[in-house]
Length: 583
Image (cartoon, rainbow, N blue to C red):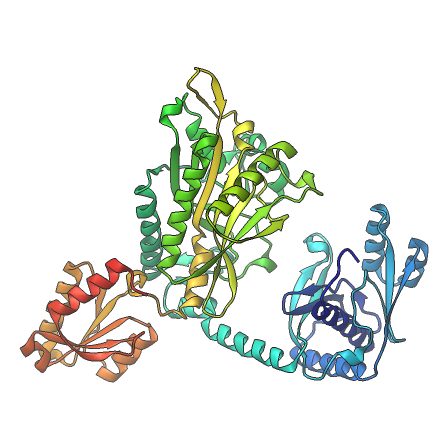
């Protein structure tokens, strides 16, 4: 074992083995993939003679419980590659792993679960299945998975399971999932008419409706408002580029298999841009700069494209067309602190408008695998030391995460906790000393000499698509007034007061409120229910009494507030809530 693992991880790993034993009992010729521990449970991959169903999961879970009650011990044994090949001679995926481990000269161990199952495994199990208590695990779902994540290799069936140390923990987790299902953005988004997908357009390519587009624009405008106040300038870049740009930046060697490529009539290779930083670097490099002109701060909200595998796509959370609110600062090393703190202030203000509780992760490179990154160890050490120092000066306790750095530099990642307690990576600040080297980005210093500059990458929402998925689920579609696509709807009780209803509508719109009008062609009750389904913050009912008083009757979706208010007073209240970004 590489490290000591917790008892919970031991339980989950042991259950993965029980799952494999149950599958072999049902399908004796099943071919076994891998069965690791994951957050909240485990999974195991199999090549099976037929597709599994939910009924199969129930049967396999029952078999697992029967095996657990047999008090089966887990025992490990070191083996030679030759012996391992004999044990798993009928398991091609295990033989593939043995070959990999032997090549890397890694030690091989097998673990027996009583006499019912044996697996190639590095260990980390309970001593006996009697430690697995009734009602603490449950099989969840079936998904497709390619062997080693390679779409050119065999496609397997992956069985996921949940596992906890107590029955109560499992029940609490299942309740959380039930609540998450109600908030699922893949269901709520189309229901609220924010976005749609088309089979003709393709998976991972969301289409934004007028309401969804309004919301995206409101969010992006707020980010730009915060950036503009801190000296950023807008730029614009094309969606495609010559291959040469990414060869020079270092991205081509690392990501060429994840890019959409285009061949011109003349045989030139272009790529749909998967990131914007090399383009912004070319804008900076268009002319010489004096140190007096730095920092240069460029921002553009634009799409990037990545050839994600179909099985990895998930609503707005994982897409092929990604809208980034991207910005890059080109500055001297002595200006890094001030610029990063400016971005940090933007992040704090923006996420404060949603009530997100933020924590910080310092994402560092993995020194054991320098081949995964650009640049020298010296550059990495300098950049990481700088970020550590800034985080400390900010007075924040950051979790360090080796291996989570970007290709070209370490990051300060901001983690937001949503209404269900789930943690999402939201904004990020990246310190890059590598692309300035690769593109020879400089300024002329006080001595008239060329001085190497540094580059700071900053995304506030990051992917607008993914951010939208997070806030749809965080607010269950009931958005704060300031960013709701429709802020108010006017409902006249009958045709008699339709003219007054339109007068209220126009007053709202003149005040900058995003308002709609529900014609009295349906019953008032039905129109109120529709406004509630659409989770519109203010539903404003007007009748003869309200017309006479120049008022409206208010139903507030989030606050459950009812009452009557003068139209002018209501408009002032709504405008104040929008300006203050009341949650």
